Image (cartoon, rainbow, N blue to C red; front, side, top):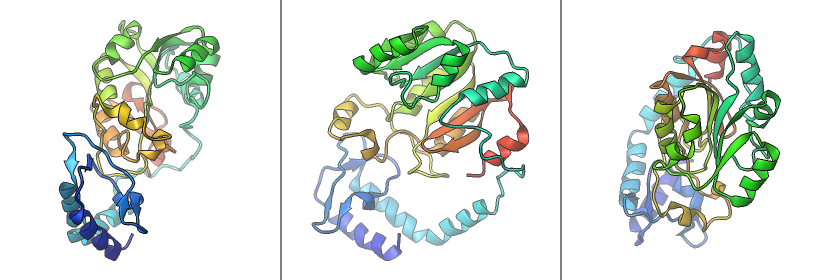
Length: 295
């Protein structure tokens, strides 16, 4: 993206007379229609950042552009990246079962228990399906869609399904059967919205060997971003065909890394829209894990 285009859009943004508000780091040019000068994306929440604040953020980026390039170059030189031999297939972010097998092979005892927040139907595009099926695992799945809940109960009858919309306020009640003090093999959170506020409520209450959480690839390191819960958020989402049309959903990888590190988890893989973390008490091969941190 050229500085000339950014400056032109900055002028346009400052001239807008609108109630549109944003929260977090976004790229508004993705939603700018050059033919008529309109913005296709409007997020209207009373406690969000204003367009003036967003314009100021863009201006700050332009003023410090050389510093940004220098920082990016320093990161690319590998200052914070491991030197282990890279094994790209070490951790599959779309199927957690091989990672569970690797941990078991290293001598860690599996509990065959898990929590899946944003479980869909338990099968379609769920990275926990093979783990649940092959290990005959039990646990709690949380899903808001009634048809998907019914399908989940058919596919994985050993797993309890909490068929409800999840919020940071009700998540512990929904997964209460898993909060008995026993360790989990896997914790997954993937709800295409306020994933990290939900995750922050769960982490102090459970011990999991593996945490899999959706990360928004549109917000790269070092930016730390997390969408917060708001009671009007789902009505806003319903105006879009799919969550993918909302580019600021979820949380950034950098935010997840600092959040999970506080609870003893290390990032071992990031692919597509998913990040995989393992707890320090069940550490994987150090060389391979370091390699996978080279994002």
